[in-house]
Length: 442
Image (tube, rainbow, N blue to C red; front, side):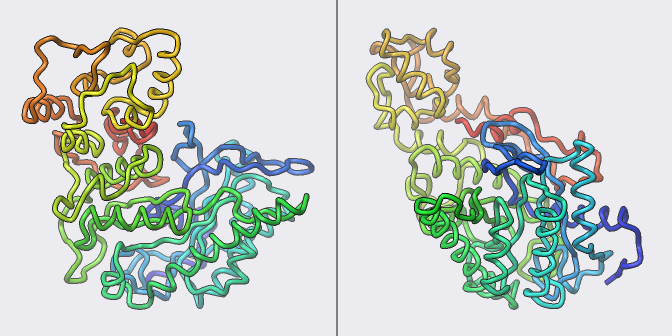
């Protein structure tokens, strides 16, 4: 372990911003705070090189308080046994950096996480002091996303939630068995406890707001979590079932998936492989189906078919497995069924419902409504007719036709996580992938 306590703040920033790149669970706020007598605007903005809910790209200062850690999680780059440069900020240094970056229009807010130094309570106290400096001394009213520290006292977690816009506590691994093997210092309860506490705090704050005019807000932008994908043997069905359960039980805003980058040497960890970015991408698409399209995990996958198709997105794959439900007539199909047609997203489905009240729709009208007919044509009719008179509707023909236009046929070779100090151009995803990630449309 290479301690770097005597280096200047710029060197600390380089070390701790780079260490923070492995945490993907940062997102837009969507929260509002009064701006009277302060500066910084958190309105519907989001994360460091992430996207807000309406597709805008926004920036946060994304750093760790420290990358020292008393835990030795085998999948983690910052584990105690890993010989890497180490550094620790002071609360004053983080607050100063955030304000100076904000004044230069580099960022719109802060994403703050940390390794566990000395003890969970000590670490949480340092994060709390940082947020207090920003909110009360510097009067910073912009967006702040802070990590809950596993094992910290409930009082400290609640205090953090009153100063932050969003909080997150990482699930880390998809099963308790994997957690016991690779992170023996952690337990299922220690991981879920802060998630449960934040959920209860949000509900209590909402109830108080209904009865008290000036009730303090607790994590107004909600909470998120993250799972590492590909480090252990859990299949896609197990991951989606867990994701669905987290949304239902804890009302999470978002579950993030992070493709495992080989950084450990434990026998069960994969070695000398590229991170499974295509699998990560498919899981994000399935996540959109869970949150916005009315699908359940058991509809997307099953115990008999537990792996997402690498060539087809999950929505196309579901449609292929349910060809008996198609074609649907575009002028009469209910909204819920329109959402299940490949090539028709949430926005397009709403446009179709509105437009067909005025007149019957044909395929030219669907083009103007931005329906992706390269995919939708196999599953819909307009006025009882297919788009092409000789269109075949058997499984093999449709599958091959859909795969022919898939941007995922070529092997995904980009496997680096984005670093604040890396060359960005070489790490950008292909255009088709980037559009899908931003819009979530299928």
